[in-house]
Picture 1 (tube, rainbow, N blue to C red):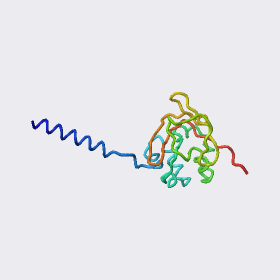
Picture 2: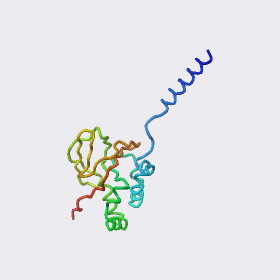
Picture 3: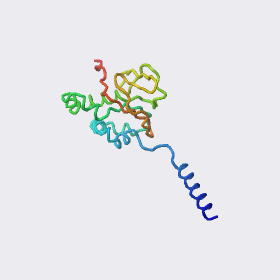
Picture 4: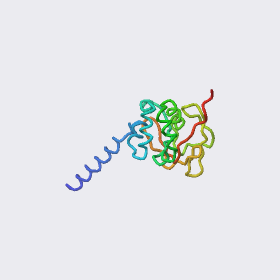
Length: 161
């Protein structure tokens, strides 16, 4: 009898604990900061002054280059970006959509990024690409959007003068 009551109590506690877990309350910016493979991106988001933006309501979809993706960018380019916060912000905003789009909802075609330029997204089976970058890890959910970790840094088109 005692064992049955104990088991019922444990089951009830487990059910209540499951109900208490709701949607995540961690923003896109804080999710990037907490993801070791996005530490380079996290530092650049801070340098560009975009942390608070990515903590705002959103929603956002971030195609987040991994640390390995940034290693493939020429050192001169990274140095130039580091010295020009406006250019850095433009490049990073090219990785962000002003909507929350999980991998299952990706439709082939062009979408407009936060910086105003368009990127080509496509899906074939479970594979999602943005421009020439492959999504390595999809659907990292945050309170104000979703992050897809990609294997390349996207290069925006030259700014129109």
